[in-house]
Amino acid sequence: MSGGLLPAGPNQGWIYRDRVSAAAAGSLISAFYAERHRHSGRKIWEQRLAAGEIHRNGQRLRADGPLQPGDRLAWHRPPWQEPAVPASWPLLFDDGDLYVIAKPSGLPVLPAGGFLEHTVLRLLEKRHAGGEPPRPVHRLGRFTSGLLVCARRPASRAWLSAQLGESSSGRPAAEPLPCRKLYRALLRPGRLALEPGESLALATPIGRRPHPRLGMVWCAAAAADPAALPAFSRLTLLRRRPDADLVDVAIATGRPHQIRIHCAAAGAPLLGDPLYLPGGLAQAEALPGDGGYQLHAWRLSLTRPDGTTLLLEAPLPEILEDLEAPGTGQRPAGGAAPA
Image (tube, rainbow, N blue to C red):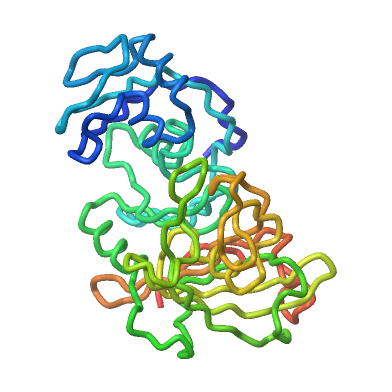
């Protein structure tokens, strides 16, 4: 693939669809949207109504009014400017179905958070037009780099999704976790009561909590949250640096922002993470897509349907290499090999 950036530019706009529940009946349209999409207040939604951007039951609206149960709303968002993003990535594995890349930091995987066209999904669709494009099986945060697994066939995406999101809800928190999904990160220094080489099991459940800008955001779950998702990680301290602690984190579940939340819940947020605070709660002014941290999906072991194992590795960014450890003065070559 060619290098460089995909420059900032306008997209084609998008239609956001909502169905009005009985609980929301009677609300004004502007109030409904201000509660549903908290990035904009009621005055902005009134302006969008006046501009004809909102339809109800297929009819363009020009003024505010009360909603009825079952109303179908559609916000026809005009084109907007998307920021520049990395335009290429190293291809690590491609057997005609599975397609594994080393995603660069800064590139979103799927449309969300103001990105529509400048995503891995859209770039794959454009670059494999005329055939069956590989599609991402899981998410990585926009500023998380490393292994991203895609597949062309729906059946392959199904078994991969089941593996990558594997739940280990019955696993005791103290039991060593399998290193099938291994990440490397930098944490705020001196926050962990560990010596280099020691490990810590992390089992903080993850749930949604109120957030002033988004409505809800994934965080360390409240103690009595019945919808909390079980989550299991194992953190190993590799080396203490003057500015950061270098760690490996193996995860046995695939929860939203799991490593960022678990490290913060343990009292050691990722260095430069603007969102998660010690304890695992979210900063009110920040968003999940904000960058500044170093997190890399490094190694992955996948069991294929035929029982064979596929081992994958994405070369580490230089800042995450453990250069003082014996035998790690050079970057691994990356790629894959059947075991």
